Length: 247
Ligand code: PEP
Image (cartoon, rainbow, N blue to C red; front, side, top):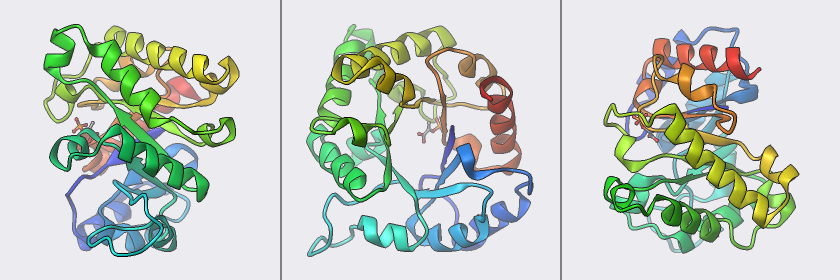
C-alpha cells in the first residue's frame, strides 16, 4: 500500500497534469493519493481505476456550524474513499489531540470511510527514550472504542516527526523495530489475526532510493510518501519497487 500525501501543493490544473502523466497500467488496488480538498473531485474523475483518491483531513462531525471543516459525506460525494487522520503537521500546527483523532477515526469507520491514522515521535522524544511510550499512547488512545470489525478497515502510518520532509529516513531496522511494537500493541488489543491484517506504513522522507530497504522489513506493509509523491517519476518508481517485494 503506497499513499501519496500532496499536503498544500497543486492547484486543480497542476493535479490534472500529474494524472495525465501517470502510466495507464497502474491499478487502484494499493495506490492512494491524498490531495487538497479543492482538487478532490477533478482528480477522482480523472483517476478512474489508476488509484484511490482521498483527503488529508476530515471533520469528526456529521454537519453543522463548523466553519472551515469538511464532512465525510462531502468527501465521499467528491469521490474520496479515505482520509489521513492525525498527521503530525495537524497535531503540531492545528493542535489535534489523541481524543479528537479518536473521534475522527470512529466517525470515518462508522460511515464506511477508510482512515489512515498517523503516529510518530519527535526527535526530542526519541532522544529522551520515550519513543515506545509516545507511540503506545497515540495508537491506543487513537483506536479506543473501535470494534474488531471497524479496526480491520484502518491503516496505520508510523511517521517519525524528525524524518518528515527532512531527507533523514529512519533506518530500515529502526522502522521495523517500531512497526513490530505497533503490531504487538494491536495484537494485545485485538487478536494476532486482526493485527496481521492491519497495514502499517512507514513515512518520513521515503524516496526511490530508500524504499527498497524499508519495504523488505516484515512488519512494513507500505509507505506514506510526501515530497516524492509530487513528481510522477519518483512516485511511480516507489510504487513499482514496493510491488516487487510485496506482491
Ligand atoms: C508526509 O507527508 O507524511 C511525509 C512523510 O512527507 P515526506 O515524505 O516529504 O517526508
